[in-house]
Length: 302
Image (cartoon, rainbow, N blue to C red; front, side, top):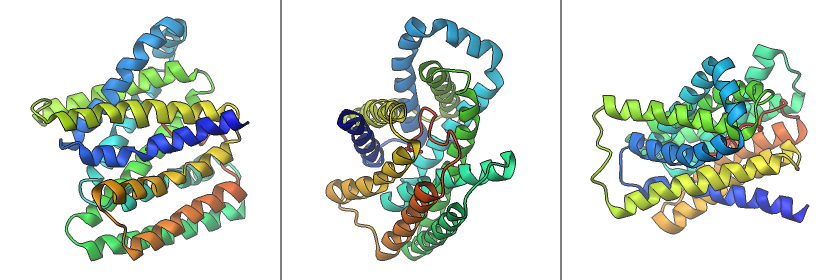
């Protein structure tokens, strides 16, 4: 158990670095997202070709529409979330994007008629109150903070759609094959967006390139793979609640490295959101598979 919990802690620490690494990368959001997904898929593809070639071929032949949709949603998630970090605070962005499990729970209840306990609905209501407070904090900050908060919520919705597709797909596919295909589709979608928008992919500083490579290796590969490994041996609820440490870790790192301290409204709203998610999933029970997809912790991990 200590070793298994160690992977969980490693995963949470790794994904907590994402927001600060994105801030350190002085490049357009699409470029940062492209590097993150492109490097991750480049690392996974050779492994999948060696260890899961047959499964990879079957997935592409039988499930390509779902894989394509999941990849597009994952690309949208990263594009919106990374863009939000250039407009709002790290604390607000990371807390809002962590609301993904609540959207998954609501969709599972509304679309698939899955039973949710009363505590889940109470937790969702509490988190909604927290989101409204963070929205008010965005208006107080002024500038583009409010639109950044809305982008973070949009990223959470996109991740929820990705997870809803993934939980069905993962019943028929292993983690490696599924993650490889979806990451590759997402990377391709981002690269197309970069080309269409005529955004330069080169000419950035060494620090920016180092931050983007670290973003792909640490939060994306080490973080998400550690969390998915932990899910094989630990209760999904335990992993879901542990991932709530990401906003805390990200906010602390932002204060330590960027000198960005959250406001009182952000702290209060963030605390309500995290408390609501903990209530919904620790006592309310989560829909099966909410946290069983690659690339999610966060995140739902970011």
